[in-house]
Image 1 (cartoon, chains in turn red, yellow):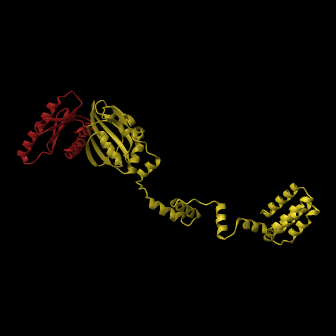
Image 2 (cartoon, chains in turn orange, yellow; image 1 turned 90 degrees about the horizontal axis):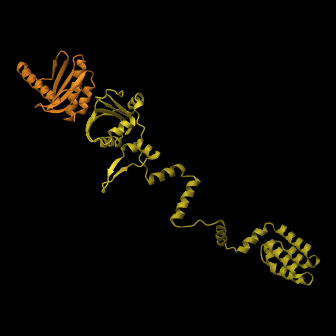
Image 3 (cartoon, one colour; image 1 turned 180 degrees about the vertical axis):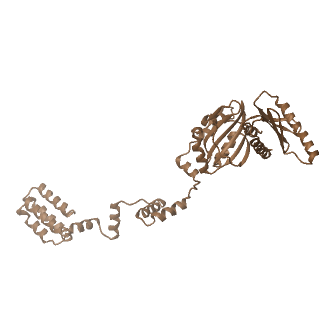
Length: 114
Length: 289
Protein backbone atom coordinates (compact mmCIF):
# COMPACT_ATOMS: atom_id res chain seq x y z
CA UNK A 1 0.00 0.00 0.00
CA UNK A 2 2.80 2.44 0.90
CA UNK A 3 5.62 0.79 -1.00
CA UNK A 4 6.57 4.07 -2.69
CA UNK A 5 6.86 5.92 0.64
CA UNK A 6 8.96 3.19 2.19
CA UNK A 7 11.21 2.97 -0.87
CA UNK A 8 11.80 6.74 -0.88
CA UNK A 9 12.83 6.75 2.78
CA UNK A 10 15.04 3.68 2.41
CA UNK A 11 16.85 5.51 -0.40
CA UNK A 12 18.08 8.11 2.09
CA UNK A 13 21.59 7.24 3.14
CA UNK A 14 21.75 5.73 6.64
CA UNK A 15 18.09 4.71 6.95
CA UNK A 16 17.84 1.23 8.52
CA UNK A 17 14.13 0.70 8.77
CA UNK A 18 10.77 2.26 7.95
CA UNK A 19 7.56 1.29 9.74
CA UNK A 20 3.99 2.30 9.12
CA UNK A 21 1.37 1.37 11.70
CA UNK A 22 -2.11 2.38 12.75
CA UNK A 23 -2.88 4.26 16.01
CA UNK A 24 -3.19 0.98 17.94
CA UNK A 25 0.28 -0.12 16.99
CA UNK A 26 -0.68 -2.69 14.38
CA UNK A 27 1.89 -2.96 11.63
CA UNK A 28 0.60 -1.96 8.20
CA UNK A 29 3.78 -2.01 6.16
CA UNK A 30 7.49 -1.98 6.84
CA UNK A 31 10.92 -2.63 5.46
CA UNK A 32 14.22 -2.86 7.27
CA UNK A 33 17.77 -3.75 6.41
CA UNK A 34 18.58 -5.87 9.47
CA UNK A 35 17.05 -8.80 11.32
CA UNK A 36 14.47 -6.89 13.33
CA UNK A 37 11.06 -7.94 14.63
CA UNK A 38 9.05 -5.54 12.52
CA UNK A 39 5.74 -5.98 14.31
CA UNK A 40 7.31 -5.22 17.65
CA UNK A 41 9.19 -2.26 16.20
CA UNK A 42 5.94 -0.84 14.80
CA UNK A 43 4.21 -1.24 18.18
CA UNK A 44 7.11 0.48 19.96
CA UNK A 45 7.11 3.38 17.48
CA UNK A 46 3.40 3.97 18.08
CA UNK A 47 4.10 3.81 21.81
CA UNK A 48 6.76 6.52 21.45
CA UNK A 49 4.31 8.68 19.54
CA UNK A 50 1.44 8.27 21.97
CA UNK A 51 3.60 8.92 25.07
CA UNK A 52 5.32 11.94 23.52
CA UNK A 53 1.99 13.37 22.37
CA UNK A 54 0.61 13.08 25.91
CA UNK A 55 3.67 14.81 27.36
CA UNK A 56 3.68 17.64 24.78
CA UNK A 57 -0.03 18.13 25.35
CA UNK A 58 0.47 18.41 29.10
CA UNK A 59 3.62 20.51 28.87
CA UNK A 60 2.65 23.06 26.28
CA UNK A 61 -0.87 22.27 25.12
CA UNK A 62 0.64 21.71 21.70
CA UNK A 63 0.46 18.92 19.15
CA UNK A 64 3.35 16.74 18.03
CA UNK A 65 4.77 17.33 14.57
CA UNK A 66 7.86 15.12 14.54
CA UNK A 67 9.42 13.22 17.42
CA UNK A 68 13.16 12.57 17.26
CA UNK A 69 14.78 10.20 19.73
CA UNK A 70 18.56 10.01 19.58
CA UNK A 71 20.63 7.11 20.83
CA UNK A 72 24.39 6.59 20.60
CA UNK A 73 24.17 4.70 17.33
CA UNK A 74 20.71 5.38 15.95
CA UNK A 75 18.13 8.11 15.66
CA UNK A 76 14.39 7.39 15.58
CA UNK A 77 11.95 9.77 13.91
CA UNK A 78 8.21 9.38 14.41
CA UNK A 79 5.35 11.33 12.93
CA UNK A 80 1.67 11.00 12.11
CA UNK A 81 -0.70 11.67 9.23
CA UNK A 82 -4.37 10.82 9.49
CA UNK A 83 -4.70 7.39 11.05
CA UNK A 84 -1.17 6.33 10.17
CA UNK A 85 1.99 6.59 12.23
CA UNK A 86 5.32 6.60 10.43
CA UNK A 87 8.55 5.62 12.11
CA UNK A 88 12.05 5.78 10.64
CA UNK A 89 15.18 4.31 12.21
CA UNK A 90 18.43 5.73 10.87
CA UNK A 91 22.14 5.84 11.70
CA UNK A 92 23.05 8.72 13.97
CA UNK A 93 25.39 9.95 11.24
CA UNK A 94 22.60 10.15 8.68
CA UNK A 95 21.77 13.68 7.47
CA UNK A 96 19.12 14.80 9.94
CA UNK A 97 17.90 17.76 7.86
CA UNK A 98 17.47 15.63 4.76
CA UNK A 99 15.79 12.96 6.82
CA UNK A 100 13.23 15.45 8.16
CA UNK A 101 12.48 16.71 4.65
CA UNK A 102 12.00 13.16 3.39
CA UNK A 103 9.77 12.27 6.34
CA UNK A 104 7.56 15.31 5.65
CA UNK A 105 7.41 14.43 1.94
CA UNK A 106 6.49 10.86 2.88
CA UNK A 107 3.70 12.13 5.13
CA UNK A 108 2.32 14.27 2.28
CA UNK A 109 2.26 11.25 -0.03
CA UNK A 110 0.59 9.12 2.65
CA UNK A 111 -2.05 11.80 3.06
CA UNK A 112 -2.68 11.76 -0.71
CA UNK A 113 -3.03 7.98 -0.71
CA UNK A 114 -4.92 7.58 2.54
CA UNK B 1 22.89 2.57 -11.01
CA UNK B 2 19.80 4.73 -10.88
CA UNK B 3 18.14 6.85 -13.51
CA UNK B 4 18.92 10.55 -13.29
CA UNK B 5 15.59 12.32 -12.74
CA UNK B 6 14.73 15.89 -11.78
CA UNK B 7 12.94 16.86 -8.56
CA UNK B 8 9.56 17.33 -10.21
CA UNK B 9 6.31 17.97 -8.41
CA UNK B 10 4.02 15.01 -8.02
CA UNK B 11 0.97 15.16 -10.32
CA UNK B 12 -0.93 12.23 -8.79
CA UNK B 13 -0.67 8.80 -7.26
CA UNK B 14 -2.47 5.79 -8.69
CA UNK B 15 -2.88 2.26 -7.39
CA UNK B 16 -3.81 -0.84 -9.36
CA UNK B 17 -2.45 -3.18 -12.01
CA UNK B 18 0.67 -2.16 -13.89
CA UNK B 19 -0.73 -3.01 -17.32
CA UNK B 20 -3.91 -1.00 -16.81
CA UNK B 21 -2.09 2.08 -15.52
CA UNK B 22 0.51 2.00 -18.31
CA UNK B 23 -2.19 1.46 -20.93
CA UNK B 24 -4.06 4.52 -19.62
CA UNK B 25 -0.90 6.59 -19.79
CA UNK B 26 -0.25 5.42 -23.35
CA UNK B 27 -3.78 6.24 -24.41
CA UNK B 28 -3.63 9.70 -22.85
CA UNK B 29 -0.33 10.45 -24.67
CA UNK B 30 1.35 11.05 -21.32
CA UNK B 31 4.70 12.85 -21.26
CA UNK B 32 6.76 12.67 -18.09
CA UNK B 33 7.98 9.92 -15.79
CA UNK B 34 6.41 7.55 -13.32
CA UNK B 35 7.77 5.89 -10.19
CA UNK B 36 6.37 2.50 -9.39
CA UNK B 37 6.83 0.76 -6.08
CA UNK B 38 6.00 -2.93 -5.74
CA UNK B 39 6.94 -6.10 -3.95
CA UNK B 40 8.09 -8.97 -6.14
CA UNK B 41 10.56 -11.12 -4.19
CA UNK B 42 11.61 -7.90 -2.50
CA UNK B 43 10.65 -4.23 -2.36
CA UNK B 44 11.49 -2.66 -5.71
CA UNK B 45 11.17 0.76 -7.26
CA UNK B 46 10.82 1.31 -10.99
CA UNK B 47 11.12 4.48 -12.99
CA UNK B 48 9.71 4.76 -16.49
CA UNK B 49 10.06 7.66 -18.93
CA UNK B 50 7.17 8.42 -21.28
CA UNK B 51 6.91 10.72 -24.27
CA UNK B 52 3.52 11.14 -25.95
CA UNK B 53 2.38 7.85 -24.44
CA UNK B 54 5.43 5.95 -25.68
CA UNK B 55 7.80 4.32 -23.22
CA UNK B 56 11.33 5.62 -23.76
CA UNK B 57 13.29 4.16 -20.86
CA UNK B 58 12.77 2.02 -17.79
CA UNK B 59 14.65 0.77 -14.75
CA UNK B 60 13.90 -1.33 -11.72
CA UNK B 61 16.01 -0.93 -8.58
CA UNK B 62 15.72 -3.67 -5.98
CA UNK B 63 16.01 -2.19 -2.52
CA UNK B 64 17.71 -4.97 -0.59
CA UNK B 65 19.80 -6.82 -3.14
CA UNK B 66 20.67 -3.48 -4.83
CA UNK B 67 20.17 -5.16 -8.19
CA UNK B 68 19.10 -3.15 -11.21
CA UNK B 69 17.07 -4.26 -14.23
CA UNK B 70 16.93 -1.93 -17.23
CA UNK B 71 15.17 -1.43 -20.57
CA UNK B 72 12.97 -4.13 -22.03
CA UNK B 73 13.77 -6.57 -19.21
CA UNK B 74 12.46 -4.06 -16.68
CA UNK B 75 9.14 -3.78 -18.53
CA UNK B 76 8.89 -7.58 -18.82
CA UNK B 77 9.55 -7.91 -15.08
CA UNK B 78 6.65 -5.62 -14.22
CA UNK B 79 4.15 -7.07 -16.67
CA UNK B 80 1.13 -8.66 -14.99
CA UNK B 81 1.82 -7.00 -11.63
CA UNK B 82 -1.54 -6.54 -9.99
CA UNK B 83 -0.73 -4.34 -6.97
CA UNK B 84 1.47 -1.39 -7.66
CA UNK B 85 1.62 2.19 -6.44
CA UNK B 86 2.41 4.62 -9.21
CA UNK B 87 3.57 8.19 -8.71
CA UNK B 88 2.98 10.26 -11.84
CA UNK B 89 5.17 13.27 -12.65
CA UNK B 90 4.19 15.30 -15.70
CA UNK B 91 6.91 17.06 -17.69
CA UNK B 92 7.17 18.83 -21.03
CA UNK B 93 8.41 17.06 -24.17
CA UNK B 94 11.62 19.11 -24.15
CA UNK B 95 12.38 18.22 -20.52
CA UNK B 96 11.75 14.51 -21.07
CA UNK B 97 14.04 14.54 -24.15
CA UNK B 98 16.86 15.99 -22.04
CA UNK B 99 16.24 13.43 -19.31
CA UNK B 100 16.17 10.64 -21.88
CA UNK B 101 19.50 11.83 -23.31
CA UNK B 102 21.01 11.46 -19.83
CA UNK B 103 19.51 7.99 -19.41
CA UNK B 104 20.18 6.38 -22.78
CA UNK B 105 21.44 3.21 -21.13
CA UNK B 106 17.92 2.49 -19.84
CA UNK B 107 16.27 2.73 -23.28
CA UNK B 108 13.30 0.47 -24.04
CA UNK B 109 13.66 -0.80 -27.60
CA UNK B 110 10.84 -3.30 -27.70
CA UNK B 111 7.92 -2.26 -29.89
CA UNK B 112 4.92 -0.73 -28.14
CA UNK B 113 2.46 -3.36 -29.37
CA UNK B 114 4.59 -6.08 -27.83
CA UNK B 115 4.72 -4.26 -24.50
CA UNK B 116 1.03 -4.04 -23.97
CA UNK B 117 0.14 -7.46 -25.36
CA UNK B 118 -0.69 -9.90 -22.65
CA UNK B 119 -2.28 -13.32 -22.39
CA UNK B 120 -6.08 -13.37 -22.47
CA UNK B 121 -8.23 -16.23 -21.23
CA UNK B 122 -10.80 -17.58 -23.68
CA UNK B 123 -14.10 -19.32 -22.82
CA UNK B 124 -12.39 -22.67 -23.19
CA UNK B 125 -9.76 -21.65 -20.67
CA UNK B 126 -6.97 -21.58 -23.25
CA UNK B 127 -4.53 -18.73 -22.83
CA UNK B 128 -4.09 -16.75 -26.00
CA UNK B 129 -1.51 -14.07 -26.66
CA UNK B 130 -3.37 -11.22 -28.30
CA UNK B 131 -1.16 -8.68 -29.99
CA UNK B 132 -2.11 -5.31 -31.33
CA UNK B 133 -1.83 -4.93 -35.07
CA UNK B 134 1.27 -2.84 -35.78
CA UNK B 135 0.36 0.71 -36.72
CA UNK B 136 1.37 2.07 -40.08
CA UNK B 137 3.62 5.11 -40.30
CA UNK B 138 0.59 7.17 -41.38
CA UNK B 139 -1.41 6.11 -38.32
CA UNK B 140 1.50 6.87 -36.01
CA UNK B 141 1.89 10.38 -37.47
CA UNK B 142 -1.86 11.02 -37.28
CA UNK B 143 -1.88 9.95 -33.65
CA UNK B 144 1.32 11.83 -32.75
CA UNK B 145 0.23 15.18 -34.16
CA UNK B 146 -3.48 14.79 -33.29
CA UNK B 147 -4.54 15.15 -36.93
CA UNK B 148 -8.26 14.88 -37.57
CA UNK B 149 -9.04 13.26 -40.91
CA UNK B 150 -10.97 15.40 -43.42
CA UNK B 151 -14.36 14.18 -44.66
CA UNK B 152 -15.30 13.59 -48.30
CA UNK B 153 -16.70 17.09 -48.89
CA UNK B 154 -13.59 18.72 -47.41
CA UNK B 155 -11.38 16.65 -49.71
CA UNK B 156 -13.54 17.60 -52.71
CA UNK B 157 -13.42 21.32 -51.95
CA UNK B 158 -9.65 21.12 -51.38
CA UNK B 159 -9.14 19.49 -54.80
CA UNK B 160 -11.48 22.02 -56.43
CA UNK B 161 -9.59 24.95 -54.90
CA UNK B 162 -6.24 23.55 -55.99
CA UNK B 163 -6.90 22.33 -59.54
CA UNK B 164 -10.42 23.67 -60.11
CA UNK B 165 -9.55 25.53 -63.32
CA UNK B 166 -7.28 22.93 -64.87
CA UNK B 167 -8.14 20.55 -67.72
CA UNK B 168 -7.38 17.64 -65.43
CA UNK B 169 -10.15 18.66 -63.04
CA UNK B 170 -12.63 19.14 -65.91
CA UNK B 171 -11.67 15.71 -67.20
CA UNK B 172 -12.23 14.17 -63.76
CA UNK B 173 -15.61 15.90 -63.47
CA UNK B 174 -16.61 14.72 -66.96
CA UNK B 175 -15.58 11.17 -66.05
CA UNK B 176 -17.69 11.35 -62.87
CA UNK B 177 -20.79 12.51 -64.78
CA UNK B 178 -20.34 9.76 -67.38
CA UNK B 179 -19.99 7.15 -64.63
CA UNK B 180 -23.01 8.50 -62.72
CA UNK B 181 -25.33 8.12 -65.71
CA UNK B 182 -23.68 4.99 -67.08
CA UNK B 183 -22.62 6.71 -70.30
CA UNK B 184 -19.75 5.24 -72.32
CA UNK B 185 -17.27 7.63 -73.86
CA UNK B 186 -17.76 7.45 -77.68
CA UNK B 187 -14.88 6.47 -79.96
CA UNK B 188 -13.41 8.96 -82.45
CA UNK B 189 -15.13 7.25 -85.41
CA UNK B 190 -18.47 7.30 -83.61
CA UNK B 191 -18.10 11.03 -83.01
CA UNK B 192 -17.34 11.62 -86.70
CA UNK B 193 -20.36 9.54 -87.69
CA UNK B 194 -22.59 11.49 -85.29
CA UNK B 195 -21.36 14.82 -86.72
CA UNK B 196 -21.86 13.62 -90.29
CA UNK B 197 -25.39 12.45 -89.48
CA UNK B 198 -26.15 15.77 -87.82
CA UNK B 199 -25.00 17.64 -90.92
CA UNK B 200 -27.15 15.37 -93.13
CA UNK B 201 -24.29 13.94 -95.17
CA UNK B 202 -24.07 10.33 -96.32
CA UNK B 203 -20.93 8.30 -95.90
CA UNK B 204 -20.32 8.41 -99.66
CA UNK B 205 -20.62 12.16 -99.78
CA UNK B 206 -18.21 12.60 -96.90
CA UNK B 207 -15.67 10.49 -98.73
CA UNK B 208 -16.33 12.40 -101.97
CA UNK B 209 -15.69 15.72 -100.20
CA UNK B 210 -12.38 14.46 -98.96
CA UNK B 211 -11.47 13.39 -102.46
CA UNK B 212 -12.45 16.85 -103.85
CA UNK B 213 -9.46 18.42 -102.17
CA UNK B 214 -7.05 16.68 -104.52
CA UNK B 215 -9.38 16.18 -107.44
CA UNK B 216 -6.92 17.32 -110.10
CA UNK B 217 -4.29 14.85 -108.90
CA UNK B 218 -6.83 12.03 -108.82
CA UNK B 219 -8.08 12.94 -112.29
CA UNK B 220 -4.59 12.84 -113.74
CA UNK B 221 -3.89 9.53 -111.96
CA UNK B 222 -7.07 7.98 -113.45
CA UNK B 223 -6.16 9.22 -116.90
CA UNK B 224 -2.67 7.76 -116.47
CA UNK B 225 -4.14 4.39 -115.48
CA UNK B 226 -6.42 4.38 -118.51
CA UNK B 227 -3.62 5.36 -120.88
CA UNK B 228 -1.10 2.88 -119.54
CA UNK B 229 -3.37 -0.11 -119.06
CA UNK B 230 -5.89 0.24 -121.88
CA UNK B 231 -4.28 2.71 -124.26
CA UNK B 232 -6.08 4.21 -127.25
CA UNK B 233 -9.31 2.23 -126.88
CA UNK B 234 -9.86 4.13 -123.63
CA UNK B 235 -10.25 7.43 -125.43
CA UNK B 236 -13.95 7.80 -124.57
CA UNK B 237 -13.36 7.03 -120.87
CA UNK B 238 -10.49 9.52 -120.74
CA UNK B 239 -12.71 12.19 -122.26
CA UNK B 240 -15.38 11.59 -119.62
CA UNK B 241 -12.85 11.86 -116.80
CA UNK B 242 -11.16 14.88 -118.31
CA UNK B 243 -14.48 16.72 -118.72
CA UNK B 244 -15.21 16.51 -115.01
CA UNK B 245 -14.30 19.58 -112.94
CA UNK B 246 -15.01 18.24 -109.47
CA UNK B 247 -15.28 14.97 -107.62
CA UNK B 248 -19.05 15.31 -107.35
CA UNK B 249 -19.25 15.70 -111.13
CA UNK B 250 -17.09 12.61 -111.58
CA UNK B 251 -19.43 10.78 -109.20
CA UNK B 252 -22.39 11.84 -111.27
CA UNK B 253 -20.67 10.60 -114.45
CA UNK B 254 -19.61 7.36 -112.80
CA UNK B 255 -22.25 5.30 -114.57
CA UNK B 256 -21.24 6.68 -117.97
CA UNK B 257 -17.60 6.05 -117.22
CA UNK B 258 -18.41 2.51 -116.18
CA UNK B 259 -20.34 1.93 -119.38
CA UNK B 260 -17.44 3.23 -121.50
CA UNK B 261 -14.99 0.99 -119.68
CA UNK B 262 -17.16 -2.12 -119.93
CA UNK B 263 -17.49 -1.53 -123.67
CA UNK B 264 -13.73 -2.03 -123.90
CA UNK B 265 -14.04 -5.82 -123.38
CA UNK B 266 -14.19 -6.08 -127.17
CA UNK B 267 -10.56 -4.85 -127.37
CA UNK B 268 -9.12 -5.64 -123.94
CA UNK B 269 -9.46 -8.79 -121.75
CA UNK B 270 -12.35 -8.56 -119.27
CA UNK B 271 -10.03 -9.19 -116.35
CA UNK B 272 -7.92 -6.16 -117.23
CA UNK B 273 -11.04 -3.98 -117.58
CA UNK B 274 -12.20 -5.06 -114.13
CA UNK B 275 -8.73 -4.32 -112.75
CA UNK B 276 -8.84 -0.81 -114.21
CA UNK B 277 -12.35 -0.23 -112.84
CA UNK B 278 -11.30 -1.28 -109.34
CA UNK B 279 -8.24 0.99 -109.51
CA UNK B 280 -10.41 3.96 -110.54
CA UNK B 281 -12.87 3.12 -107.73
CA UNK B 282 -9.97 3.12 -105.30
CA UNK B 283 -8.91 6.57 -106.44
CA UNK B 284 -12.33 8.21 -106.27
CA UNK B 285 -13.44 6.28 -103.20
CA UNK B 286 -16.76 5.20 -104.66
CA UNK B 287 -18.13 2.24 -106.69
CA UNK B 288 -18.71 3.10 -110.28
CA UNK B 289 -19.69 -0.34 -111.54
